[in-house]
Each structure stands twice: as structure tokens, then as C-alpha cells.
Length: 132
Image 1: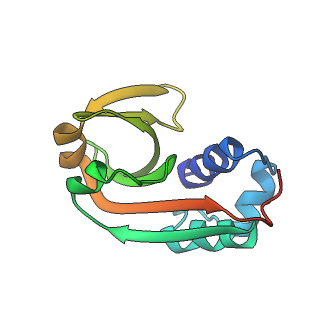
Image 2: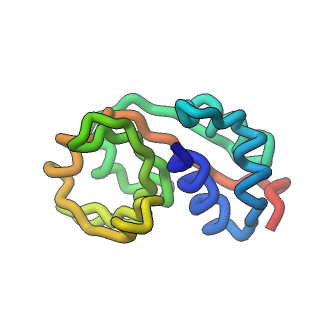
């Protein structure tokens, strides 16, 4: 349930800021059902990030100017929805940080990832006002 907030915290931390998870939970209004992509983007905007939400396919990962890290929305094998952070890539693989400590950092082939990915990608770019 806290995967969205944890994923957002990872992205924000990468850019040099680290608000407490409790603050991010409050900013995203995370409830028992979790967090929506809209709530994650809204919290990031309030922290002075430029944000973009995309419904894409795996060709997204061939874009040379794709800002990383980014958050991806997935459907787990159990059928539950989940957010992960993509922080690196090669021509055929993605480096993924899963907020679930039992999974941690993994590398998946883009084709294998695409089978689980809902196509939702959340992109974040710090602005001059982003706290570092």
C-alpha cells in the first residue's frame, strides 16, 4: 500500500531532497487503497518538480532523453497493482528499484517488464525551485 509513496521518495531523494515518508503520505493523501498516479504527481509538483504522466508502450525506453529515475505502474503476478522506480537501462534491460525490500533492486529485460507494466509512466524533472 505504501509503494507509491516509497517510489516517490526514491525519486525525490535521487534529486537531493528527502522529505519524511509521513509528509509524503500526507501530501499524497495515501489511504488503505494506496496512492493514485495523480496524487503522486500532485505531491511532486508541490515539491517543485515538473511532472509528466504518460500512457506508453515499451518504445518509451528507446527514447534517448528519457529522464531517469521515473516511476512505472505495474500489475504484479498476484494481480495487485504496484509502483516501481526505473533508474537505469541498456538497449534490452531496465534497472528497477522495487520499494518492497523483499525484492529490492533487480534487472529485467524490457520485454519481460512490458508484460507486467500497465503502460503508465511518471516522469519527474527538478526545477530551479526544487529543494536540495
